[in-house]
Length: 307
Ligand code: NAD
Image 1 (cartoon, rainbow, N blue to C red):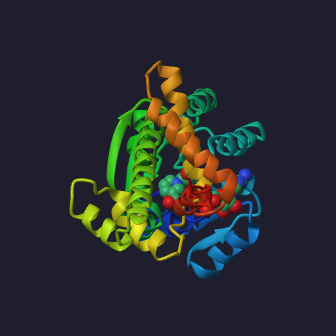
Image 2 (cartoon, rainbow, N blue to C red):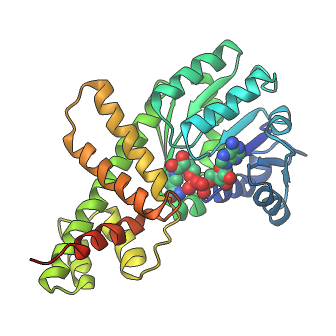
């Protein structure tokens, strides 16, 4: 008999479909009679989720959710927001000893480790389990999960809950290791995006058909997740709606760039990619879709006086 009482904080682009997949698992995961509690700063969003999804309830606040849960999942924009919310719950005495907190946001490894140590003193385990696969992967329940944490028993106990949201689960090591791997992955994805963006701009300026550039890349050695997924579907179509904010991807590359500094690893390309995305974020805004960075970068190029 399952005895998971799950609460989910952050019903955004990713959190909504992920929470929905926990609900799909129903009685195989959730304790009989337990409704999945959801909370979001945007209360209308949490209320809408509870209205649309059976067996879910919108909690009045994060503290109410925590009191009714033995597994709390956070899917929030940044590590500092996660720490604010979870430390707030700890300070208010809303986290029972034995509770497992799973942070699935893309957070900074150092902050995660500090939070993990703090929670451990109160008998609460923290698992970092950031995800990759975007909104389509979240909807399909096929996300890649990078699972770090210091409490092996808590990870074992949380595993069936994690499996409802992901298809490829990796145990990465100690607390913060999942977050480290996630930042490295998103740095590579962002660097690929920037490289394809530059190649496309050059190809177009030469007179190549933009669709042909992407079609050829996608069956050649220059292909990548972003060339296959983002350019045809979002950039060339003019949709710019992949469901991942430019501000969030920029944050991830910054985490990787900071990590290079902390570890003393030379990673000059990481700084270049970070600056490119930070520049686009300033121009397009934090909430713009990350794919619109191409629009910003190429507008920069075409605006330059022709000599
Ligand atoms: P989002 O902005 O769509 O969702 C975040 C949600 O958190 C929002 O609904 C917001 O209202 C809520 N929120 C913010 N502060 C809060 C608080 N203090 N208390 C409660 N709720 C609060 O973001 P997202 O795209 O779902 O991303 C969430 C996390 O997952 C981020 O760390 C992101 O980097 C990561 N991620 C995103 C994607 C993607 O494709 N969108 C993919 C992988 C990982």
